[in-house]
Length: 489
Ligand SMILES: Cc1ncc(COP(=O)(O)O)c(C=O)c1O
Image 1 (cartoon, protein in one colour):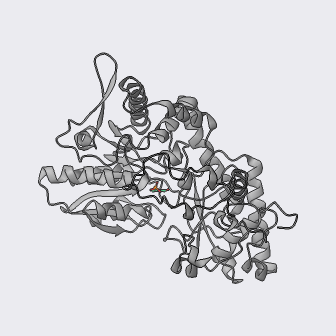
Image 2: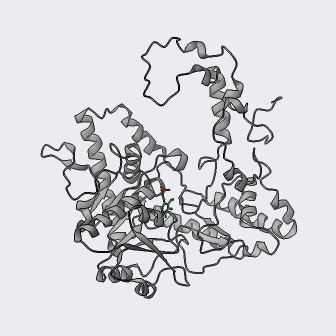
Image 3: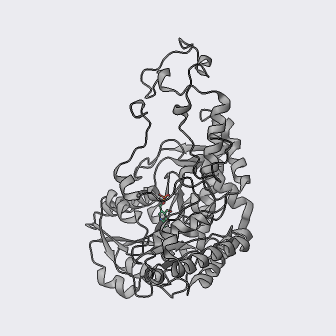
């Protein structure tokens, strides 16, 4: 790497694997041989020193520092990944969570404090969502869906009803059908109306004695609020069915509207979306489930109980519960971050989150529609979906647009989802973006739209400024190489 150390600015510079930097005697001498601790043959880790790269501490630190500069995260710039709510996570929540590091799970007094915090979070989530009971244990949004559907399954089974089917609108999140299937239900996809939301009259056509529930994402994956949800809830209840709401898009409703007031019986929220805790690879996540009182006895174990002395303990006394869905206390660090986020914003700040998220998305939508096709004209909340229909006339696809955005220093939006829009670009800026960053994004999208008319070839080659340019993703997916092996070196 002659004289070039900034891999982000000099795309041809690649960071080799640590194994390829290995040189005999750099560091392994620091590991005692033979070991001065007993070997644990049952642990699935290799104790063969030959497998470890022999690199010094400073080389290791520099390697990971350089790698971190190749990463793109919300702390680099806007990350408008629709349906993922990639917003900035305040550091105060990190600090609150870090304070748990010294707590030992076998110390009852310390654990009582942790459980008190978790009980408080359950209470706040219940208030925010208008629901009666909450379980914090599911480890992610999809896990929350599965847990919620298992709760409904248990309720249906205990009533002895032959309800085997869950209806899912075509604007629902992609994980919904999988969660229902794993919970033992058959699923039926039902069409949303022409305006992008489910209507009560469409639902009526699909209701029958075998329907256990409707699972609806609200706002849905077009960013559209399900405006007939109360009527829909009424129809379901009259049919003896439950309304499950995928509440992962709660960022649009936070502190403004409560699913419980809409007639929702069971839902989950994504702490790693709405409540500003780490997301994706920076996780782990958390997908608490909330229910109305009639379903509370089926929630997972353990339950958090407050004793008479004011101390908190765990209880496994729940004969009608679905049982455990996660070891220990779920992803407890994530829960503490969410609690800190709720406490720091309070009842005034939380609705402002939803309002700003919707205003930011609305601003982008109004600046970009016209330049790009807007397939649904129905008002949207925290996200919206464009398509590549106009650019396709010049041979430019959603993939070209997304890759080109990387050259402007943006993480691309979600693409080709939802499936109800061909060539979809699903954009969610979140409330944490300032106007200047939104404008920078608009400028980039304007320039891409202009280049698609004047010089489309230019966009086919994007990205050009990243360490790796356009790869054949299908080929890569079919020929995955995820580990280094000596044989290949
Ligand atoms: C609406 C919706 N439902 C469910 C999920 C699944 O959540 P997770 O990725 O945490 O499993 C997501 C993910 O962002 C989502 O946006």
